[in-house]
Image (cartoon, rainbow, N blue to C red):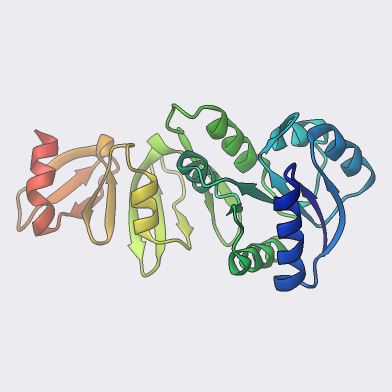
Length: 246
């Protein structure tokens, strides 16, 4: 695979080049750039298989590059500093990212994922990432869900509940939308959706409390939701659920 690196810090650029040589020897670097203008000129002449993008550049951001050169077909891997909000934004958008300093094994894994999904870069996920990054004081109102077949960008308010299926998660939506099956754990989404009125009421169930209609006091309890589903409440969660409903 061919690659171009957009990075404005010489030390970080050299480190990434060395890591690619060590951990991804089948990746050939065909160009580098240190800013928006330089990158845009380079990408008009060359279209690599992989594009590594530092977010913050001296003359703008990597999103500016994507707007100037909108027909980029490369698989994108973003490089970011260890910023808690930025990391959360990447997780909401389900876009590949690496933290500085880059870990070699994680780099290898990211390149492997890029190979597997070659040609399926989703503009909706990138738009969601851009909006979330640019509004650090706001919780995102959408989430990007990658399935084995496609990428679904869904409104968080439309999610009624999430259900664990081994190490995978099934999303059930309002309005008769088809459920979505994602190969990430329920725990991952429990953390990600913190602050959006989602409550883990059972080992296998994460519920959007805005869709709760009724609490049935049978056994440890059941929640009836707006779509008619009934979800069991774990005995250790009963007190918390009752308090929230009050």
